[in-house]
Structures are given as structure tokens and as C-alpha cells.
Length: 334
Figure: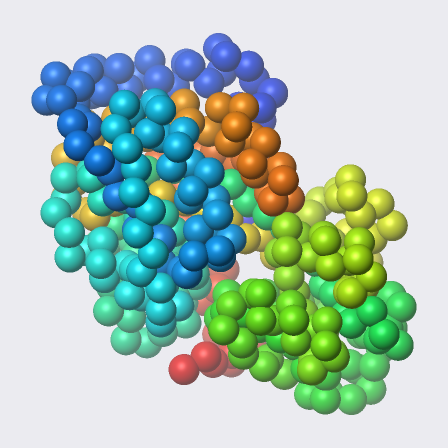
């Protein structure tokens, strides 16, 4: 799943200026044409399909200033929350295809909705033009601090003894799919309890309303450090620097499990190619700004910049993955 993203990350963070600027050379003619037409000449709007204070919203606001500085135009963050991102997607598709409305999206709106909903009122591949991948945050499997489960092995052993008895707090359908993926790899059966967002799901885990939750690392870190949650598993490929005692999925015998919350930007299909290329160049430059890197680090997130082509490949791979999982496990959300 992460090959394209890892290559993009290495290009941004390790390859240095030449590796980052080289892709821009091929975009120069198109970007120049877009500049000749004056794009952008007015404020850009980020449509965030989740509420203020959500992970996607916080990342959007980090990028808003950087994109404004690069483009020379102010950026307005417009939260259009509801229906697992569908309301925000429809708002973007109801706007002009002129590059001034940017869909600041995530897993749910660009991939998992396509796999989960039978009557999705938009097609994230056909109706949206990719601009770039931006960042990603791996997750932790966490239990209440008072839980009897001291290790992931404890939790899995109990789940195998009592199929369907253990409850997982799902902050969105994406989290439910991650849990279904965990069930599939670990060969267990658990029950998703749905909450309105990852914050409520984390609260449910802290209070003991559920047995465990899969939570984004940025949300989980202060709760684990404050002894309100106990982390049993980190879904990254290597241990997290701030959670050195928490094993990875591979170390726990769950090779291949990598629940990853990510952000990306897209525009309405039909947006002129030169404008899409200009936006791609703007986001590429914004992704390298120190204030963006600092902001993502504070969230426990990583810069995973990938251009439009990398984003499309990643999107298609993710959709295919979730469709296969749903077909094999029978997970339903509706």
C-alpha cells in the first residue's frame, strides 16, 4: 500500500532540493501558461469535509497559511461536515471547475466511501481530479488504562475465546474498516460501535465504554502519556519515537497491517490541466516549508508528499484493497 507514498516521502525529505525541483521542470511550461492567465488572482477555498478541530481540519489550517504564502492569495477554510464527508464532496462538485475550490480530503472521502456505500452520490475517481498527497499518520490500538489487557496478545487471546464479544470504538467507517482488517489478519471477530468522530471514540475507550479503539497517533499520544489509555500496537513499519515500548504490527505477528490516516487534495474534474499543475506546484512548495513540517510533527503526522500521478495510483490501490476486504469479510456500514 505504501510504496508510492514512501518513494514520495524519500523524494521530499531525503533527496534534497534537486530531487524536489526536478519534477517541477516538466511542469514548467504548463505552470507558466497558468501564470500567464493570472492563476490565482483571488482567494482559494479549502473545503474540509469534517468539523473544525478534526484531524483533517487541523492539517488544512496548517497548509492554508503556507499555500497562501506561496500563491500570494489568502486561503479560506470552509468546513462542510456530515455524512462521512459526502456533504463536503458535494459542495466541491457544486462549485466551478476553476481551481479556486480545493477539496481538502482524506481516506473516507477519496477511498473508503467508494468501497462501502452502494449509492454514493459522487465518484471519487471520476468526479475529482487529484492534486497531491500531503501527510499521513499511523495509528495505535489502545485500551483503557484500567484494562486487563496488558499486551495485544492478551486482547487477541480473549477475542478468540469469545467471538463477537469484544467491542471496538469506530470514529468513522474508515476506522471500522481498519478494525475489520485487523480482525481478518488476526483471525478474530469483534463488534464495531460507531461514534461521531475519532475524538468521541477515544473518549469511549478512555471511559471503558468499549474494550479498545484504533486511534490516530496524534490523538492518542497525550492520552497514553497521561495514563488515560494504554497503547498495545503501533501500525507504522518501525516503532514510534515517542512510544518506544509499543511494538509494531509486524513485531506482533500481524505483518502487513498498516492503518494509516492520510490527507490529500483534489479539485473538481474538468479543471483545466495548467491550473491543476499550478496547484500541484504550489502544494509541493508549501509541503517543504518549515512551519508545515513543524505543524505536522506536533500532530504526530508525517509529510508524505506525492504528486497527482502518485496520488491517483495510491487512491486506486486503496479502493481495491477495501473492496477486497469487504468482499472477503462481509463488512457492512449502511
